[in-house]
Image: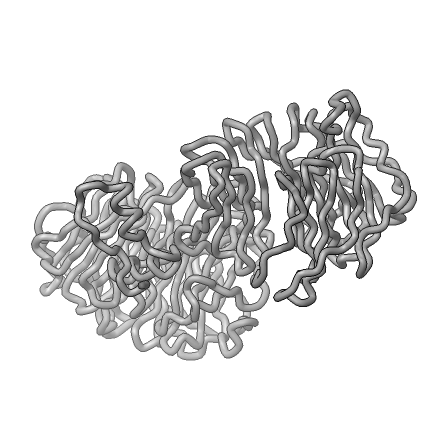
Length: 620
């Protein structure tokens, strides 16, 4: 707002709402008044005639999506706490609000505290101070139909809200939970599991794309909570200096704004970009060689444009297959083809990516194994794909004609599931690791006649989960069931030599490891909800650089974004996340998203006796 609003003598404001489009602002005063301003000219807001003497304090005011209707939740009168609250509907005109019919007959003696319009416009949700939640059919706002009463809340409602897509209704309150219902059909809501906040929840807000829900509560250690609207799993849980009284997402959905009872409004950039949650565990994340596209495999296959890594954008609809499972993924050279493994059918599919928004299958699905294909990888020249499966076999396929792959050979059979396959950068060596606790190397210069190099290697008496070559092809990294990662010098592929001591720290086994494109950084995904990052600048003395923690569940997959110092990871928590692995880049991101740096005066007040140091000099 470019100009202050005229003083209307309102000592305390309980609610604010903009009409869609921003041309009208409504404010609810404790003294039973509404204030309205015309903001067509934002430099000179003009007061409008507003309803007066509403018979009680207005706790909530909202406009419908078209801006043609408004609703108010009116509590008990300041002068008489024995009368129940009411809900009123209003016709919105250019000059103000006109009452529509009689107040809604809320069957509750407690004050009405919150109202929310369904985006489709035909329903209004109401919450009261006793925990009553109702949905009213207002197809005819002059004569609303009898309401539906929703079960769940046991104490007063602080706020309720429909998601922008209309698929969800959230109601938070004094019972320490945020209750949720599916409302694609608002006339037949379906209760889903609540989100527990352990103390009063005061405010809720959905992200613009409806994939996330922000909850503001009075709990100092978790007063701001952001959860996925599909799984209700936490995306971010943050402490707050004071009890949160209101939350809102910014229009781009990247930040959350909070208002608190200390009189301060704060801006919270959400930690690490999170892609929309999947309906099943994420099994694979893979970047194209130019880093421009990220593929995510779960129950379906999704591709994301990563031009702006803070705002990944899904390319077209998700792609499905008959198994309902998108497992291992691999991009071919030039990123023109993507290989995908499926579930129990043992099939793989190759996609033409000429149009990345609409991947096109190249030929029929290929039956590659008896049972699920656990992993697949392309040779550097794109002529071969190596597959490993639960049948304990490794196969080599000629994919020079991707619509008709031809099996060339089966290098060997393991005594357990083959978890991983990988080619070296030259393409003349293939490695595979298995649940039989061994890994094997083959010379595949002649892919029709692979030659095993040396004896099977048993790094430890535990499953071999993943094994990858460094970019220079001289080092092999192996993640194991004993929660360690081991490095091997494979200058002589027939006699791999362990380099130094195992990399330790995680508390459970590692599903996958990967090098960045420089070969100086190694990341591992572990079953203890962590991603570990090591600095391999000195290969004989690796240093632990960082541990990234996901909210919950195994981490199955990780991938570095080429040339960008970023890492994608996901797994059982269903939400792919992007982190920056460069310290300077992370610092620049923090400074660019936190607003004005701490001033010298603030520094002196909070750190007396310590010399001032501007943490973000480039921001001043």
